[in-house]
Image (cartoon, rainbow, N blue to C red; front, side, top):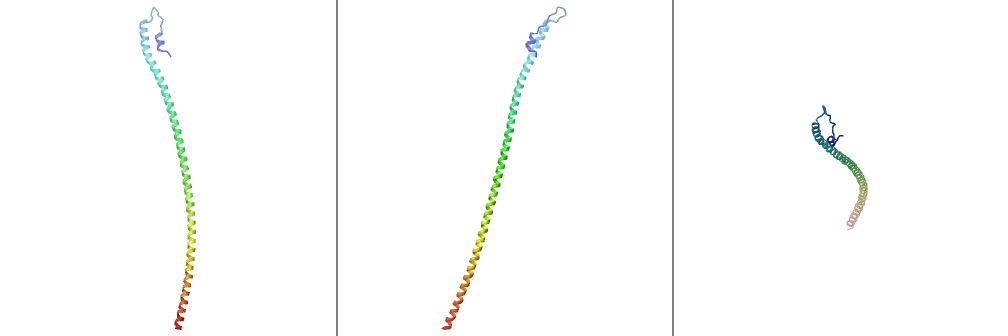
Length: 150
């Protein structure tokens, strides 16, 4: 690429007949050098800015990648916590059902024992009632005999 300095230092050979007017050529070259310098500076600035923007894009791309990885890890951790909580809940339910079943069995046994005790007490009461009835009958017989003898 031709630099502004190359344009400024460019010299044309001068012809005596039908040649270019050296002053006019020099003026044109000065104007061209000025415009070209401005454009050259802008291009250099644009190149620098483009490099900075590329670095920023690369930086933000890395940040995006890191955020995506972080999000994936967070989702994975959330899934693991959810699965662990579900397993723990299932275990708690199984334990509760087992305990409830055991309590039910114990209560059934206690009910059976209490029914047996009630039956035993009921039989004892019947025996006691029969004995009392027998005693009362014998006492009544005894009183009748005493009344007869008197």
